[in-house]
Length: 191
Ligand SMILES: CC(C)(COP(=O)(O)OP(=O)(O)OC[C@H]1O[C@@H](n2cnc3c(N)ncnc32)[C@H](O)[C@@H]1OP(=O)(O)O)[C@@H](O)C(=O)NCCC(=O)NCCS
Image (cartoon, rainbow, N blue to C red; front, side, top):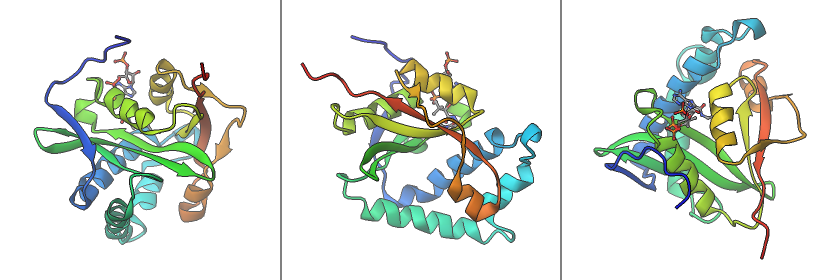
């Protein structure tokens, strides 16, 4: 049977549709604003807001359009976005993909109001099942996002040798030094 998460029975997990883009971006933005500010590193809430929205709020529509296009164009083979729905409302999403020759979980977010109820577990399991089980699965996570790191460790991910590095995309886009680490779920050994 394995470890059973605290399932909410009404949760369904399916491929995202382009109409889900706005909610996906809202869930991600809300998570970034609550988790990424860190005064000891000089990362403020205003910095994160600027990263999300741009100086004049101009980025948000572009980001939603980006996600809409991405979901429309995903072939389900090289990349895919799965959403968790609770009573038809999107409450979380995960984006497994093949990138630079590696299997990577690009994003995993659950709405704050429904965290800790097994939805993240179901999304992670769906992403892992989508991959080739005989190859490693990688992801990046903010180095001080302790709850997410603990969550991934619970499901067998381990920190890689990469150590802490500054996310180059966030640095380029907003000048923020956001420290990240890499984690890996090692491939199942072939019998
Ligand atoms: C990490 C995350 C996806 C887990 O989803 P979830 O639905 O809360 O996870 P589950 O209910 O299946 O598992 C709960 C476990 O997740 C961990 N967890 C991480 N962040 C949590 C949060 N804010 N609230 C509750 N649990 C959290 C805990 O270890 C928790 O274990 P516990 O119930 O023994 O305390 C979700 O909490 C989230 O979206 N966090 C913010 C965004 C984020 O950090 N994403 C990862 C970026 S790489």
